[in-house]
Image (cartoon, rainbow, N blue to C red; front, side, top):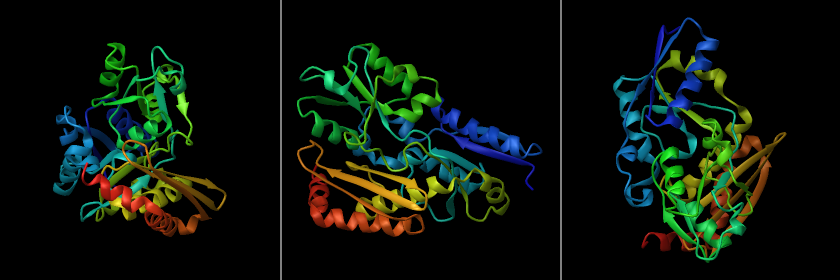
Length: 308
């Protein structure tokens, strides 16, 4: 058994909370192992004045952490699974996926109680093409404005009245004890979440047998089935790029219900479908649903995005 483990993490409050949460669970289970955190700045943390979709999307928050793992500087990294590319660098793997927290998106406003209450032309902040497209589908009269930075920064912009509302992941707000800012939980009918939203992923080296053994207890089988289908869906649709795609898997017994949407960025066109099958077929269900939706008009929508 290893005597020490170094966890790499981004320096934001949420990333540190997530890394410390996993560290504390390892310490509790294996008190003889010394667990320490090492902060690493990622490209996504440095570039805050450009929309994510313009600078590469998901890998922006993982590349530097992955390089540190491959070089041996850290033993593992804790990520929000929604930030993870669907393809990982050679030599690395997802060693554990934790029990999923609330996967929904939250409407946050200091003046309005819900998305419906926003006045015509109100400004809504979001860094996500997925959220933007779905909000505009539901309320085409609204203005969406790009919103980057950590949770504190985003909430501060709201307090400074730079926008009327912002959309954030419910799980992140709850993890930092900021539930009081949640004005409305957006139902999936309005805003399907991102792939893996609400789950934490622990990434490590494939050949590090000792660390893999330590991390096994963190896995949650229902969450793994759901996010396996979601990630297979996204991989089949468009790989790891940021695209206006929402997808969510829900497990009931041995059955998995997978629902997904592909939208134009302005919300004027949507392909939305669902599929159900056995959890043991999670990967195949994700691929099948993606192929059905691409054939039903999703490919045309995504092809247009390339010109955006």
